Every structure is written in C-alpha cells, then in structure tokens.
Amino acid sequence: MKISISKSAVSTVCSELYRHNYYYTNPNLTTFFNRYVDKASVSSWNSIIAELARSGDSVEALRAFSSMRKLSLKPDRSTFPCAIKSCSALSDLCSGKQAHQQAFVFGFGSDLFVSSALVDMYSRCGQLQDARTLFDEIPNRNVVSWTSLITGHVQNDNAAGALSLFKELLIEECESKNEGVNEMCIDSVAMVSVISACSRVSGKSITEGVHGFVIKRGFEDVLGVGNTLMDAYAKCGDLGVARKMFNGMTERDEVSWNSMIAVYAQNGLSAEALKMFHNMVWDSDVSYNATTLSAVLLACAHSGALQMGKCIHDQVIKIGLEENVFVGTSVIDMYCKCGRVVMARTTFDRMKEKNVKSWTAMIAGYGMHGRASEALAVFYEMKYYSDIAGPEFTSKYKTLIYLAGSASAEVIADIALCPFEAAKVRVQTQPGFARGMSDGFPKFIKSEGALGLYKGIAPL
Image (cartoon, rainbow, N blue to C red):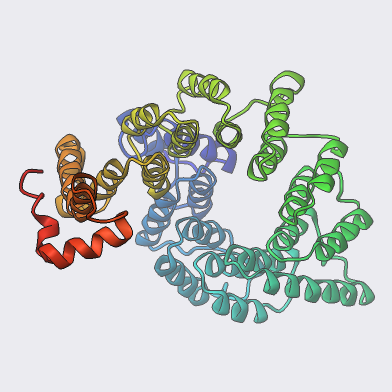
C-alpha cells in the first residue's frame, strides 16, 4: 500500500537518490521510491522537486515537475517557486516562460512567492524589462521581491539601476511603517545586493553612505555584509579601509581571507598578500581552497617569487587541484612571469580542461620571452586547427594538431622575417652598401626588386 509520507522523509529519500546518482537507475531505490511514495500526492511531488532544486540538480527538478504534470496533478502554490528556481539556475528562459504560463493558468500569477521567483528568473535570464513589469504588477511586495529585482540589476551590470531601486525600497519601507505594516523590513540579504552594486560604481561616497546605513540597522556584524563591504572598499581603491574592515570582523570565513589576499595581489602588494596567506594557514581555523591558491599564485607572479610559487604548485598537486582550470591557469601565468616557460608548458599540457584565459596565458608567456613561433603555434592550435578538426578529433589527436600548428607558425615566421634577413645579410657582407637597415632596406629593393627579398625562402 502506498502512503503519503512526510516532507522530511521524502526529502531524505530524494537526497540519497541524488547524492549517490541513483535517480531512476538503482533498482532497489527505485522500488523503494515506487512503493512508499504516493505519486498521486501533490505534496510528495513538491518535496521531490524542492529537494532536487536545493541539491543543485535543476534538470532533474524540472523533469520531476514535468512527470507530475503528465499525471494530470494540479500544482499548488508550493510547486511553482521551486520549479521556477530551477529554471533560474539553468538560465532557461523558455522553460521559465512555460512555468509562468502554467502558474497563471492555475491562478497563482499574483501569488507573492511565485511572483518573486518569476522576477528572479527573468532577471537571471537577462530580461530586466520583463522582470520590472512583473514586479510592478505584484500587489503586496515584500523584501524578497525587492531583493530579487535589485540582485537581477547587479547581475546584469546595471549597478545604477540597482541603487535607484534601493532608494525606492527605502521610500516604500517608510510608507509601510507609517501605515502600521511591518512586513516591509530591509534585511541583510538585501544589503549584500546593494553593497555589491556600490562596488560596481565609481566614487567611494556611495559606499560610505550605504556603510553608514548598515551600521544604523545593525548589520555590521553579519558575515556576508562585512565581506561585501570589504570588497566594495577595495574596488574603490581604499585598501586601508578594506583592511580595517577585515581586522574588525568578529567572524571570518574563507571568503573574507580570499578577498583580502586577492585585493593585495591584484594591486601589486605581493608581500602583504603572501603574509596574509601565511596568517590564514597558521592563525585561523579556515581552510584554503582553489580561490585562495589562485590569488597567492598571482602574488608570486607579480613579485617573481619562483620558489614560493613552486611550493604552492606542489600543494596544488597534493590536494588534487592541478586540473582545476582556474588554478591551472594561475600556475601557467606564475611560471611564465618567473621565466620558466617550459614548466608553464608542462602544466598547460596536463590540463584536461582549458578556457580562453588558459590559452591566452600560454600565448602571452611565449610572447613575453620572445618565442614568437611557439606563441603562434599555440594560437593556431587553439583556434584554426581545433575549429576545423572539431572537439572530438582535437581531444584524440592533440599532438598532431600541435605539430600542425607549430609547422604553420614556423612557415609564417619565416615568410615574415625573410625580407629583413635578406637586407641584413647584404648590409653585413657587402662593405659600403649601406650604413644600416634604415637605408639598406630601400637600396636592396631598388637593386633586386621586391621579389628579391624572398629569394631565401626556398633554402629555409
């Protein structure tokens, strides 16, 4: 007999199915699921969708929502927010619009929680105008609705719009208090979004004003608010205040330490960054991660601290982060700037995944050391031959593609340098021909013609 079990029990089952990757595949767990979960219960499906969405498996959450609809079950106000949240996580505008349409059909178009989720979805998908239109239609907005729209503007690089919305929020909060309604109360989550907007506009005065508001409302000890404020001051160029914020924090996490290390590294203060990393390792209970090591490697690159960079690279290998694309790129950049291009190339070749920054770091590394042909070879490997061969062929025959790119680079370099070599040889071997390249080059063309510059290509 199938029973409708509690939300916590269903969440536990779903969590195990997701965590062990047995969803729809392990026969024992599938049998357990089919036997004890009532598929005719909307609350059971809501728990499944919510747990999958919380676990980050947005695709499966949407599949569960689709399976529920195929059973002709009527969703309720708890169904749509999690389904829409999954669309937001995937930036799936098409599915989001379908969920919006179904919410409207089932009478939840004006529901506060559904509307807030839709505002967030449209914002994350880059549709700020649609998000604002929907926001304006919400009859009784709360701080979650406002935060969704403010965050959406920040994520879409519209910091001025986000700060303008914050002003509107303050006005509405004041009006709601005058009317005796206490639902509209700005929280720390909203303040994190507002401070993030401050870090994206020029002028420290705005950040200072919002900081004063934070102190007035008693949010200065909230960890997320402190981290964001520290980042905002750093991006305004005031490293002293950022450090003062860091020192005054009653609680610090890896974000706090990583932000401070990165701020010093990015501003060329390598000694301070390395000292901060030392303090993090020895004087705190916080463990470093990939972001930390990337920032420390940047500091090593700027200061030319090769031995320290090697130690960090050893630690990267030890904790299994060498294949991390961001850490790997930082290692390449560090070795290149410390003059160890061969070690950079070895790290580059070991990376299973590369992004544009990885390729750029390797090309720039060859370039800064005058190795133009290798730089061109990497460029051709990245762009020309990979585009022609396709990803599958590229992965299987990467050595062949590199050789092809290298050969092409050599040919291009030979053709480009041949005219200068021809003129240089004539100047050096024929006394009185010319004083130097500036007058030797035009004299050579006058006597031999333009094609004479390329007579040396055949032997090359």
